Amino acid sequence: MNNLTGMMIFAQVIQSGSFSKAAEDLGMSKSSVSKKVSYLEDRLGVRLLNRTTRKLSLTEVGQVFYERCERIMSEAEEAELAITRLQDEPRGQLKISAPVSFGVQHLGKPLAVFGTKYPDLSMDVQLNDRFVDIVDEGFDLAIRIGRLPDSSLIAKKVGSSRLVACAAPDYWEKHGNPQHPKDLVGHNCLIYTLARNSENWTYTENGQTETVKLSGNFTANNGNVISEMAIAGAGVCISPAFIVGPDLAKGRLVCVLEDYEVEPINIYAVYPHNRHLSAKVRLFVDFLKDWFGACPSWEDIR
Image 1 (cartoon, one colour):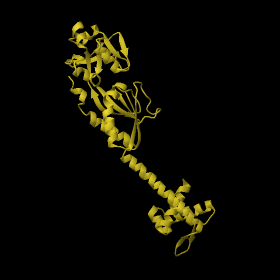
Image 2: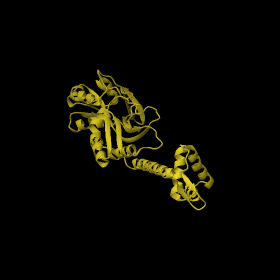
Image 3: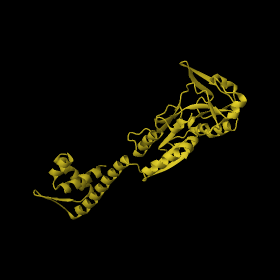
Image 4: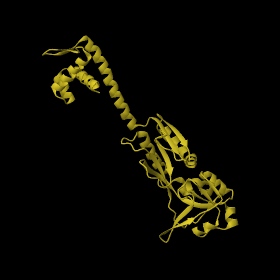
């Protein structure tokens, strides 16, 4: 680093035309500038400058060295400019982790639009329902749904979804519609195992929070499998609207207990804590917040 500093000061002396002017341009004292150049000459074992009381001139070897210094300084400026540009406009690769069901049903279109908007950016999207280690596995960010564990990661809410109890029409016809959340105890509930407290249905009644313990003969770690089982008449699924919305709209599933308030599940963009957040992550998170908005499409399904 001392060598690079000396080279920078030497190049500035040539560009400024004198030690005095170089010191002024660099915000240093004239003696400090002179000492740095002298140290550089001593280290190299050559004289770089011819000094007289009237002017400075480069020696032959000094001319060669100055050309190299000028090139290095120019490349350093280019490197700084490149970083500035990267902070203003996304480039390189954006590596994203997302849950399978949400990714398949809701990420394709926004990813396509975002990619078209920023053609210099490439995206690597990996869908997996396991809890990935963002830092160790090299992800720029992950989409996570539901309550998050405590961590050093930054989590920005980009959307939310209702949690609904539903089943196929013929299932309700055969087993009867529950009139109260406690009636779910008598039904075969299809359990999504990766959600926290997945066997509990928590609702609000008369300002009080109550919880019903669910049970059933089928569990799975994927929400789409759960909803397909429900469509087939196997039981009741407690699922996010972003999964079952299309099936509710087409009548393949029928929602119950809508008069009971249930806490929605939030959708987050999670990324490592960095003092300088990259443009690609910052812009993508803001884009997702705008895309899903306060009332995403799946919430239109009642």
